[in-house]
Amino acid sequence: MVVVANPPVVDQIPLLRSPGPRDSFAAVPVVDLSRPGAARAIVDACERFGFFKVVGHGVSADTMDRAESEAVRFFSQALADKDRAGPAYPPFGYGSKRIGLNGDMGWLEYLLLAVDDSASLSDSCAAPSNAAFRAALNEYVAAVRKVALRVLEAMAEGLGIAAADTLSAMVTEQGSDQVFRVNHYPPCPALQGLLGCSATGFGEHTDPQLISVLRSNGTSGLQIALPGGAAAARWVSVPSDRDAFFVNVGDSLQVLTNGRFRSVKHRVVTNSLKSRVSFIYFGGPPLAQRIAPLPELLGEGEESLYKEFTWGEYKKAAYKTRLGDNRLAQFEKK
Ligand SMILES: C=C1C[C@]23C[C@@]1(O)CC[C@H]2[C@@]12CCC[C@@](C)(C(=O)O1)[C@H]2[C@@H]3C(=O)O
Ligand SMILES: O=C(O)CCC(=O)C(=O)O
Image 1: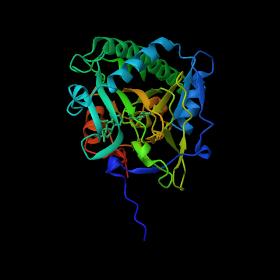
Image 2: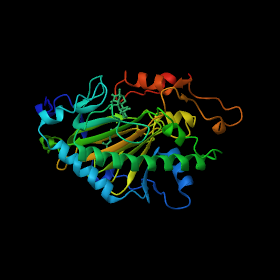
Image 3: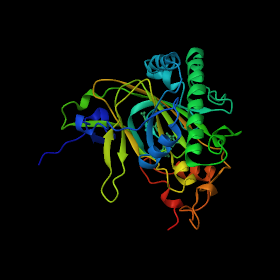
Image 4: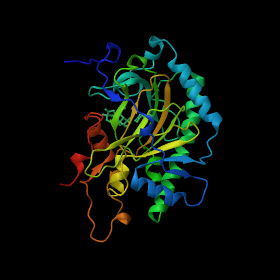
């Protein structure tokens, strides 16, 4: 019998099949935010995949490049210097390999940061302390948050909701729970040639918030699960595009639309040759926000598929789960 053990360097990090050309998802829906028809296209993509790519967003390449090069500079420091920005839990800062509090591991290092009401990194996050890095991230966060708000407004329009700010207001209200993550996945050459396996960068999960807006440096690795019906989900690789944003529907938006929009399962597979750097803005509501289907979206006699909860209750429950758990299951009406 042949026993294959993880090389020690990736011990405790689950392995995934290395993606090949046939896994590439060429049909990622693309929404041009600057064109008429964006609202319909967004709703269609959210119903089919819970995922789409955004172009025509108006964020300057300079803003994105500055944040990226400052992030690369941060992660290239000695571990002892990066550790000074940590630990990530609790509540925010630098983390390495451990994700969450319940034993999940990935081949990455990251900064987990809070965003305040004025769209800047929260003063409660001392990290990053470098002024140039902080300024670059603040500029990026302000820009990406505007993209998130435009997308949420277009969603409301596409769904036929009368008040255009019904969804966007949830992430702009005082006390809204916005989080920003900077992820760095170093290449993992130790696995080259090992039965076509790669280290897990970020394990499969859905995002608990309403919406997540992601941008990467152009190194591939992001995969989403295509809806499989009764069959097992099929994982496909999202072709990277450093000039675009990628939007994930989160669990809370799935509930607000009573399941019409799909919260998308996604994960990151480590590239064996190149570093991946990604930025993700997570738009969540204030802790007291009730998460329940919007009355305007319920058809005649249609009932909520979910028990009532607040964002605070959901978040608390989420942080007790493992990354890959189906967090909404405990809130579904049987
Ligand atoms: C294992 C975990 C990490 C996570 C909190 C959790 O307990 C389950 C959800 C995870 C997630 C996914 C989306 C982004 C994130 C910041 C969030 O709000 O929920 C992460 C959490 C994390 O990285 O700490
Ligand atoms: O780094 C990526 O591309 C995605 C990471 C992710 O899903 C997350 O941070 O929640």
